[in-house]
Length: 72
Image 1: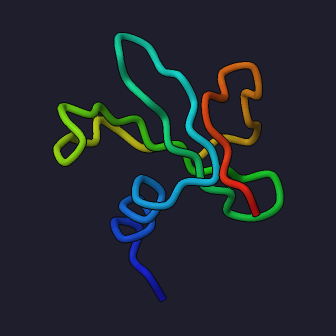
Image 2: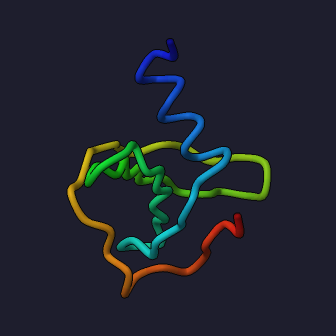
């Protein structure tokens, strides 16, 4: 079983959705099942560098802020 830190990193590396955040941030979203979505707020400094600001679990996906969606 993956730790929560590994799950957060997985969300940034292979998100199901990317949402527009505030102040130049992005939000990587990973569906956890049911009505649970892991939202990881991060900032990219370059194509190969960035940092995670915070992570939280939400009950809804804000579809109006989607900037990218993974094709299944």
